[in-house]
Image (tube, rainbow, N blue to C red):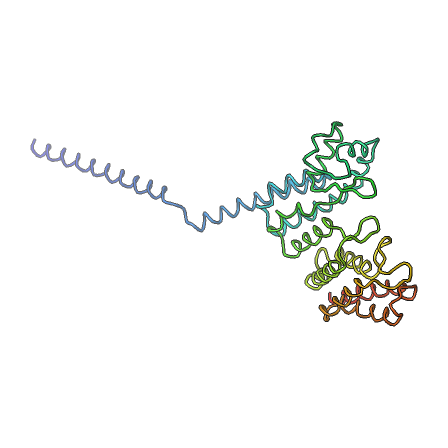
Length: 324
């Protein structure tokens, strides 16, 4: 009987020991399951999730483009997503927005000239000074909604020759510059300056001649720095416009005195300054040859001079093309 008792105790001890081992094993397994995952694996999972999120975002944007959505819709999307996009895709979104803005310009202009909408705008914005803070004062609901969509699509409403029209508001792109390349950031700055303070209005040059020269040099530097850039063709055209303007003036602001056709002193001085300060530049070289021709003609601006302007311009553009 004593032996039986000892056997029972021994059996009970073994059972208890087994239970303890099982519980301990479960506890170890449980603790292993709760251990943090391998950091590398976590990083890969996060990268995958981020990639899927970006792909989803890009699909949504591509659909907006396919649907030819109005610029204000693209702006809404870009504002919400550009910080999550890669630099390349952020740039793509801005270029697509700019392209869509150009596509919608004709449509918006047609809408602005419908019925008597120009007159209604003059009532709210006398002296043709548009103020977006007064949009709510437009009584015509459809016109008010149209102006709101235009402004939200990053256009500016400006006036010339007695009418309101629209241009892209590149100044409104400032918040995007940190997400894109230096090339596109510089392009935005150039276009903002050109449109915020246009060089010519109604056939009259309205900025100082030295400022035209400065802009020419900036455009030349841009083209030399980004010869094959996405915007080099557009900037080349802009350079040509400024160069012709600098050499000829405008219909209402010629570079010479109408009575005797002698070139104005301030323009002559501007040419000399451009040449002296930019000896190694294409612009400086072009103006140097142009001034030489003017001096040979005794400072008279006649057909002998004006007939050569396009030749000088084409030569300068050709020299720029050689840098590509």
